[in-house]
Amino acid sequence: MSRQQREDRDRRTVNLEQWVPKTRLGKMIQEGKITTMEDLFLSGIKISEPQIVDALLPDIQEEVINVNLVQKQTDAGEKSRFKAIVAVGNRDGYIGIGNGKASQVRNAIEKAAANARLNIVPIKRGCGSWECNCGQPHSVPFQVEGKCGGVRVVIVPGPRGLGLVSSEVAKTIFGLAGVKDLWMRSFGSTRTVPSYAYAIFDGLRKTYNLITQADWVK
Image (tube, rainbow, N blue to C red; front, side, top):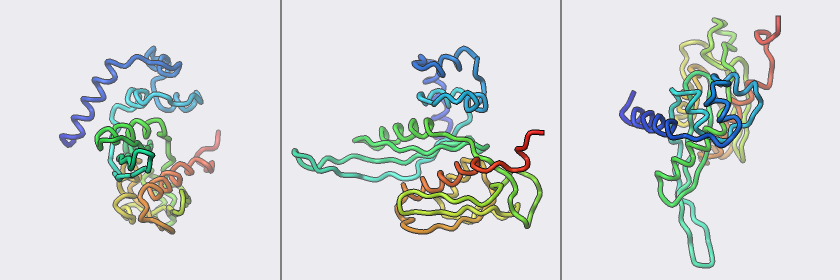
């Protein structure tokens, strides 16, 4: 664990100790009625506080995907702010992406990290490659497609040991999600990093759109 990750973990611990829940879900977690992310998603209650994710996933990690300077024309002139894209995940089946704007880079990153926690979703992992068929959750269970803006991505299962055949931005997101082997094809304006990142997130989220044989109730 790097120094930055340790500092982030210590900061989250302090925030949790000072946290006073404002929502029903937050109070249920603090009372011990919900103890896992699986219970949280089964409850069907929307996540409205980022501390909820910190409490249920203490090993969650953050990665800054992109920081841009955006300008807005107002009556008083140009107003400049920073826009950050941050991905969060536990490297074991949970991933979230969020964005935030602020006049300072650090504040923008913190807002984006909080927003990413509110957008966290579980992803389905498996071995969907006909070349492997090992049954281990190292890739995606089947081919999925994600879209955002002018970007479209196709995520294809890969055999064990292949690695992530994708760009550095995609590798960061897949790594946080806990996916180790796959191919990815991208189309459109892939240089637009926010749309590219959200297209990958959309594809991973769609892994739960199809029920596989392993999900059948016996």
